[in-house]
Length: 281
Image (cartoon, rainbow, N blue to C red; front, top):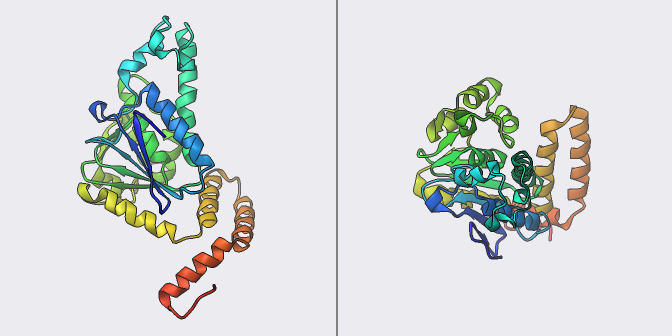
């Protein structure tokens, strides 16, 4: 897979590393990056060889949000030749361009949750606007003290509720703290992010990838189908209308995983680690 604005590497052990790769633009989300992210996520939905994803940004930022220079095109009534390949720009009415664009970028967030692989996000610098939404949609967040979380849309005259931010943030840190961040758009650094429960781990910048790999390798020791079903259960539990509903899904998930050979392999590895003489094989 050849991309220009992102990098994708799938290791033999099943760990995939997805890098936002526009460092000269602080990895701002361009129209091309948007489509390339759709492309890789569409492939990951059906790729069972990839079991865990590490999401990171090249250079000194994770992602500065939407590329504002390209964003100006959404206000134009002209159809620009260089951008005709992006279907949402092939219209003359600015409002339609904005509607199509907003829908298209929001689908990235949904696909991040729909894919079965757990996503570990690494943040070493600014994560603003859409970049903030990307890390909120991840499963686990590992940061350095240099990380900066900014709900930037509220600071430039837009709503602070953008592509999932108002959904995920209150669920991660509580409504009151989330409301302050969403309303004011202030910068939250890595240390504060750890204190309020926004991120899982705070490590030195040069150890971010090592920490993520260590965590990903722990996940690889688990049953592949068990991991997939666990992520699905987490997704359902976020919106489950009742405890009874989610327990019914958990019950069926346990029966399915118990019937899989993955379970025997994972159990055998677990017990052999504690007693080499023990094996289910």
